[in-house]
Length: 151
Image (cartoon, rainbow, N blue to C red; front, side, top):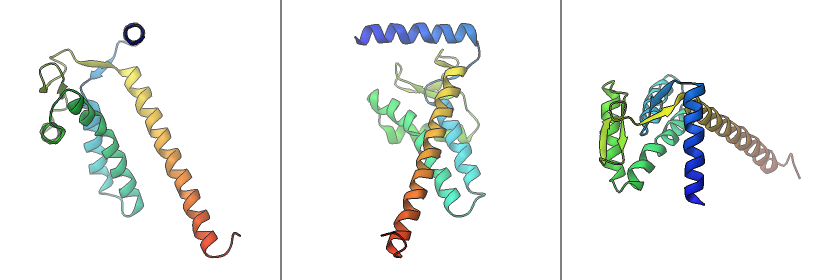
């Protein structure tokens, strides 16, 4: 059931906080901060690397966009406001689905366990890297086939 899953998730979260008491801002704040940092760093790289980095930055912004959409907010308005705050260095700002706006999520008590956030981001990065490698292999096979090297 949904309620049982929610209780299990809460127990796991509390257990993670006890075992690793570090936390990070919730409400999409971490994802937005990383998105901006990666987007800025991507400008140092020409070609495909830049495109891949920007695509990854865009994928990180899906989290705050979904938070906004699922709470009945206009995702475009929210993401531009959140981005503006983060560009100004206000990295503790995120989306509060209860007050339906951008707030200092630390002050609002909207936090995520660091250990969980790290694992989620590591897994996402690994999956994205794997997809890029697979896509590269497929592109090479496609090119070879059309040059007549592969029957």
